[in-house]
Image (cartoon, rainbow, N blue to C red; front, side, top):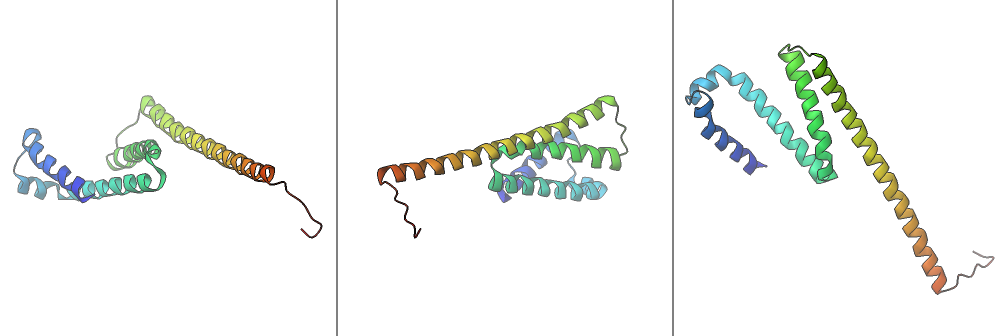
Length: 141
């Protein structure tokens, strides 16, 4: 995670003269609040990706990416910068929410199917064991 942060900083320093002032001290003095907010946001993005990857695998990136877009557009765009949403923005927001719901339902169905498969496999193992060595049931258990 440290290496990716370092690469990000190096690339930002290299590209900065092409998109604005190369006087980093002046830029930082004028925009220090946004630098800190951006750094905190980048930290939580890295942390979120790391936790998803280490605990749930790469398939959960879709949900995290959509949730990141939703929270960024709502918190930063709508509330912080007071941007207006038109009907297309609200439709995109609704479809993004629908994406999260459908992805969650798909994961639930997948986990239910895997649990059922595990039960079937366990039942087959019991049958194979009992068919090789006939099971005798005594009255004592």
